[in-house]
Image 1 (cartoon, helix red, strand yellow):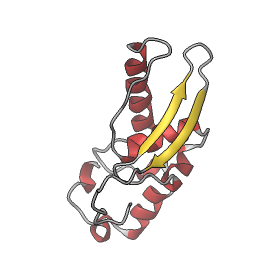
Image 2 (cartoon, helix red, strand yellow):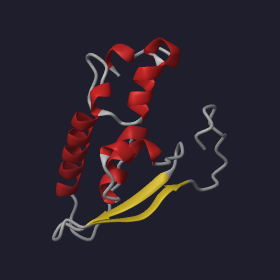
Image 3 (cartoon, rainbow, N blue to C red):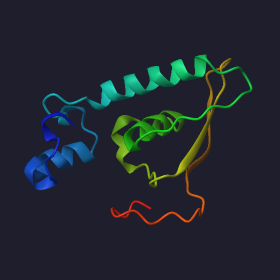
Image 4 (cartoon, rainbow, N blue to C red):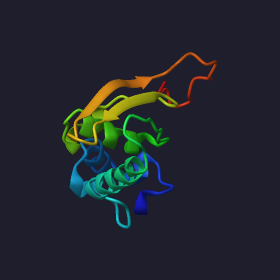
Length: 126
């Protein structure tokens, strides 16, 4: 977020927001993390997490929207420019299976939101 932290869309500017929404790597605000840097950090953290999981066992990662989009885009073989189009509902569950032998990623479901009596989000994401 860098220099955009605490600003609304109007203060950031329409051109900057359009570039960000298009996942343009050049749209990183000063002091912020680029999409490329975010993906690198997310994949390294995921690899560290999986290294501690025995084959055949499961683990869970709880994350924010863009971290989830990073993981989903990789599982779906989507480029960074397509990440913004991935729908991820607030407080939803996505399931990706990673094969440690082949490196294959299998997306079982994306943005599943069980009816658990949760109140609808104010931003309309769910």
